[in-house]
Length: 275
Length: 283
Image (tube, rainbow over all chains, first blue to last red):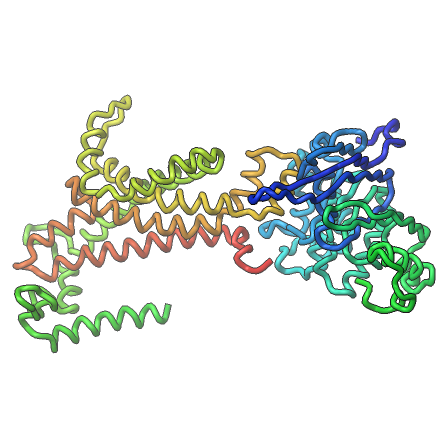
């Protein structure tokens, strides 16, 4: 799957993408207006912005679940639909979306099974993955026996099953409580590092975006466009201590100000309500 | 189970209570009978019906007990109804698949399905018998019970087609998009997603279909004059109604038991598919 010559090709290249949704009354809704963005191989990029800024639409266009009205999208140098057909990305949504009649192991196995991997190879890969997401003792449980956080971990394992070079995640931790959420963020940083995959991560939590990302793409609504891109780069050693680091808060403030369009009061950046 | 027994006992008490205290000649307003007569010929005692079931069918030597004759007939009808249900379910699922695959088929076929159920079975029965009689399939000779099974399937396919269509279209967007992201085609999506998620819709539909198949079988046996089934016995025993009123109730009870057995078979089948019904529990 990996090709040496593609190393220099960006994982995702979005050029001048506009997406309008036709509405019945004739006044079309412009979800995205002339958006351009490049994501390098192995890079973690978050898309953040208020509701209606088109961040999920952009992710769906990259995943070839929607098509742009105009503009071009390439994923590892291929068209978005070509990359989808070649299974170059793994995807996780806001809700886990597990098949309720399949066990944890069988859910993770699904893409492997659909793409014709042999049974012994599947079994080996699945046991690696359940271990990676810390669910080894739940491999034969059914989704309705798991907590929301555990279901989401299964969904992430499923997205990672075919070792994609690109992970697309649409607010995967949105429905989780704060404790679980922070734990999952740390896990994701570790998993992304281990798999060396590029990640495009949609969120509306500022600390989450800053904690996870190399770059945070701040978007604004009506019409959806990129406001600014904040380089975060807090280094590869992002442990729990980082959340209390001054450097972390500095970046949170920068993203917050970009998001609101005005400099936020300095004290606010130290508040707890950063989500 | 306990409440089921209570229900049966209550029905028995109601029957005997009305028989004991109701007006002997019934109750009518200007010739319109509102309440039934309570005479032994109209409403035999339950004990008499049960007793009659253990006596021979008629005075001919070697005549079997009524319960045995009824059981044999019910078993034969159950077999015919099962054939009808299997046939009807197959046709129903096939129609649902066609409607799922082709949007045009959905708008074109669905009205016809609904219309098909308004055709009275009695009108259909002679047609099926005469068409069947003209069929030439090698060595196969078309028998009456086959016509009966076809008519039963005509009733059974409808709930199955509607339930299957609902079930096959039931997967959430997130699941269909997931399959799309896996770049798998219509068939794999069907096998891995749509068929499993249709099970919770399909089982009640098949249960309804089973009930329809039994009604269809009994009615078709009566109207085609097929021998050996419970429908035939209901007519036959009813004809001796005035002389032997208790006897006519045995095949009716037999038909009820047959319905219960059919429902039980479908439920047992459903129990083997428990894991596909997990989405009935909140995920």
